[in-house]
Length: 471
Image (cartoon, rainbow, N blue to C red; front, side):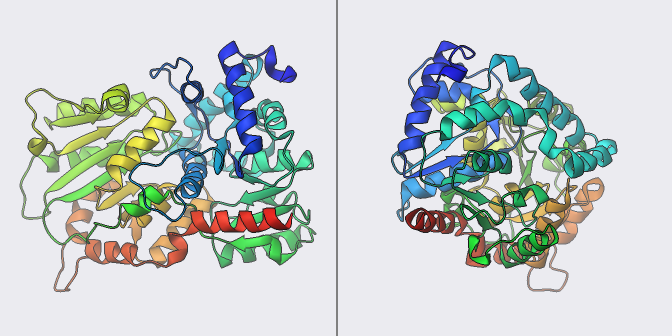
């Protein structure tokens, strides 16, 4: 621990020692780059933690997908109501938790720039330029190099990577890597180690495998097709379990979940959707069904505050399933005089990604008929796996265009007309002479979609174990 020992606070230094021990002794070592959930790491090892300190978050997807595979390993073939963490079977680490104070400004700067770009449509072209030319030069990469080196230093078995920065850095250390390409899109940096016999890939579908082989050939990289395994997207088994008691909507209240992501993406569209939907929550109309709405604000207090403010202005009764109260006592905060039967609007928020993600899994996926979200690699996969339809907000990259097209082709998703969503919901819930509305058809399509979209976590585990055996 000498490289970091004098640059971390004593508690994190102790936690890092234990993280290294577990990561290097586990059967399936999993690494990602998603967020700094330092307080939860401290709490996991029995040290004092502060539930109110906000995390730095880049991506829910890279966290939730890595966790989903770990949970699949912990559960095995069983369906458990409570998942027991078993570090001997699988363990997830994120080097962002152990960036030194000296380099911490690089982490916060990267998050600030990401939030600025993700929340301002006018800056999208700048974001596209960063995606195209500067992803491998972002300041976060140099700051996570030393923690990654220490976490992986003693490992001889392959490491399962959910972020290409971690995968490439580990490959530079001559480690064997199984890299998950989580989206149906292959960026060039995924192919830096194509041809390395100790670098394998798990990919979304056959089309993604073809794209990887094609791009590798263009880049003059020789890669054995057997090193690219089609597994499907990794989904937390608890989300898949949410579909078991779900039936396609036909009548009654339509339950919608409106979500943002790791950087608070699409906040402008979220505001416009709320402006249209909130008045519908307290009005009866023959033009649309009764609507109930849940908003997932993730770790973003400003978005949570926006929902609270708009609910007050529209005189909509609000239930807040909030941070520390929910996690510590299971209680729910709500407006005074508001009974559960009166609530048409619910807010999910926690300043830390681990707990925010648990709120989403526990409350949103089992409850919702449909999601309104950008077609991101976590939310689109998860919504469909939970048996929900999807109305997609603005995509933020080529990978999300591909995701939207995949789920549109399955008749599960369509673009959200967020400026006219009241009229859109009216049309999509009307049969118009057909036996089923679009909403009912889309939910049935989600509930019967190909197994590739729901078995990815287990497929990745099986692929990893085979590679590890042959390694």
